[in-house]
Image (cartoon, rainbow, N blue to C red; front, side, top):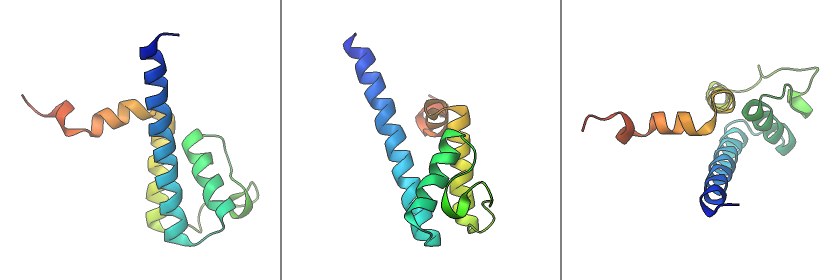
Length: 99
């Protein structure tokens, strides 16, 4: 496998893990839910896989989250659905600033 391909895959994995970890911390700090609930909620939203576990399980919903947590989870859904790189590139000012 080409070195550039490995570097690109590694960069994607690092970006994904950072987004996941930051989202998990934001949800856990903002709402104080269990680790299982926070982790599975972020995983469900970022990967578009359906319900989470524990309080966000299949017999429940995400209504108990605070507005801040709902914004974080909504951004995770967008990142998961539209892919990480395109949204990150769109948010970097140097890509849309006039030169």
